[in-house]
Image (cartoon, rainbow, N blue to C red; front, top):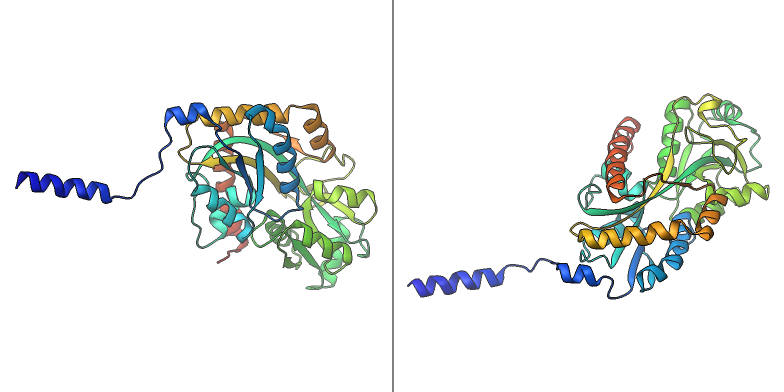
Length: 328
């Protein structure tokens, strides 16, 4: 009988599902194969451009190529969920933004991961200021004129976003709430498609990022009305913020960070953090990012990214609640 019980218990243990385990030896040998850097958005946007720049620089530090893979959909949730479920060995990373790493947790009714517990922070890359731009055909020169025009033509003006739940979506919700306007939201599947329709005049404006807007501003194809963050942008230092133009308390930017699946060994996180820190410090990357209005993080430690994600998640929870926006 005792032997029978032992056999039954052994069979029950064997039937339990195997959990992914990464040994210390595996962590020390890292990386043993190419690293996948998941972009939760379509090709062509600012996140994609920044990730590919870093991926090209980091190969020498790790001894393995970094392959950029776009897994778009659901405001970044599809790509984020893919990484959250991946083996925690450091070979699958997420190049995340404000959406999947902060906003979506409160914006979506159902979400399969938690930005504060499903990931191991690797490094905070920095932030890109958002900017309010309009098609030049719109007869307004600044934010005050835009608000007056919108109120005189309620429901007529529209703004493009990179998708439901993106910061470019909630930026418009916040603007309507503070300024008392009635801008109509038009979501797209990524920044590229949204920009195309803005340039073509199918939509009136967008709360996009400086990186995307800057070339078209310089070419005269988009008219900038104001910086959407609390401070002016180094890329357009003479352009006032929305807050300076009467939209009090307005502050929206896009942050970027790299995370791995929760449970990734600390030794592997440290190796990745060092490699990305070195890549960000190269003259090529620094010059490129600065020219695009990118503001680097002052603290690149994994711990700082963890704290920042927690703070942003709490902030956006309050914003989403006040805006009344929620997605299925």
